[in-house]
Amino acid sequence: MHGGHSHSHDHDHGHAHGLGGHAHTPTNFGRTFALATGLNVALVVAQFVFGIWANSLALIADAGHNLSDVMGLILAWGAFAMASWRPSSGFTYQMRAASILAALANALLLVAAVAIIAWEAIARFAEPEPVAGGTVMLLAALGVAVNGASAWLLSRGSKSDLNMHGAFLHMVADAAVSVAVILAGLGIWLTGWQWLDPAVSLLISVVILVGTWRLLRDSLRLALNAAPREIDLAAVREYLESLPEVGGLHDLHIWAMSTTETALTCHIVTPAGHPGDAFLHQVAHELEHRFKIGHTTVQIELEKRDACPTACQAAQ
Image (cartoon, rainbow, N blue to C red):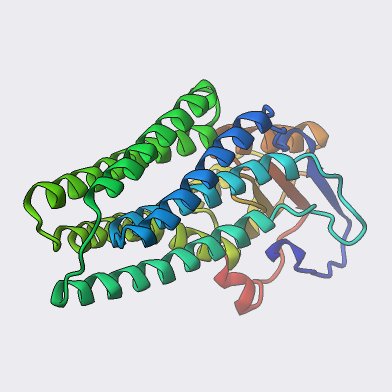
């Protein structure tokens, strides 16, 4: 992590941790996630098996889309579970970063799945294959029911928890995608237009890709220890430099400890002397309240030093 930089100083300095800025473990929604995940796993298996049987690429694509729901639910569920794990001697930040790596892996797998589905759909435009429209409609309707039920389960916590709210919105959107598959099956059943199946497959692929692009971009940024996109680094710097006790600021680093927790380290110069623990607690509180930065470490220096090396300057 960037916070691990070491600097030698030939003067007395204080090193303190903002104790008031830690995030708290969210409410436990384990049963809700377990039930929603179980329903979606069953849906994915059914859609994939009957998609092959009905020769429907649209149904298989919808199964792939719902597989992303399962992965997303497992990630969210795992984040809640991992928040309660105790630090070990080797993993002092617990396993928080595993959620970032899992999100990145999820995004890469989805991109690969979209490429395969799109390739097959384009090939089917040239040589359409017969599709069992009735079976497609039946399984897609099952998808609407499962996603609707999952959304209802998650809605109980969506108003108070951002993670739950995101999962709730995902389920609602997926129910809409399943409706599109139903319409494709109905169109094939009424008109015999087999091209509707690959057309809807491409539409679903676009929906998956649009949703996955943000996940891929943000998870890759966080895996590289970049500041979370929603945090305004300039605003954080401006706040810290505006404090009357602060005569200088350097080595400011902000990074994601997980997909829900953010850490900050910095060196603050206080020419008037050590401002005391009350100052450190207040800084940690304000950073959490204003910027959602829950883990703050501040090193106090009593006099300005020469400029940092180029590597440190680049991070400022």
